[in-house]
Length: 209
Image (cartoon, rainbow, N blue to C red):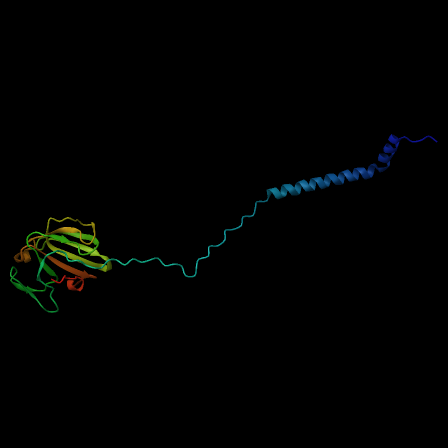
């Protein structure tokens, strides 16, 4: 018998096992295709975005600090003399110019000659004009719905819409208030709360002499 060579054995192996070899190659090809498809599918899926963690507010948040407005009035003029006060209850003041008794809704501060008139409190000028009877008049609105009025002024230093600080000069005393011209240079000062006249003594502090 003739001895089979090594190459012949290999050829004979492939001849008898060709079917199994082909099936194995096909199986490897299928597995490879499936693996590639799975990888591509994973790449196409959008990444999951985790929502931001909810903001947890404290049960007792710190409340904002409320700054109370300065409500300490100053006198509208310095070194003045009170010549007419506020009419309490049913008391009336006699006016020699008008020759009549009438309610007096403010305080008259008389000065020696022309003197500076000051804003009694921080606020906004809501009116600054000349009145045919009361002369030049300035009205200032303050916090807590308070309005101060200054009559018988001249040489105004403010106009409507101006924001003033306590102690700012708004004008000067004069005799422009015809109804009180007998008082010479002075300022007639009034205070209103919620639109109602009140006694200025409720807010003003007078220095003891």
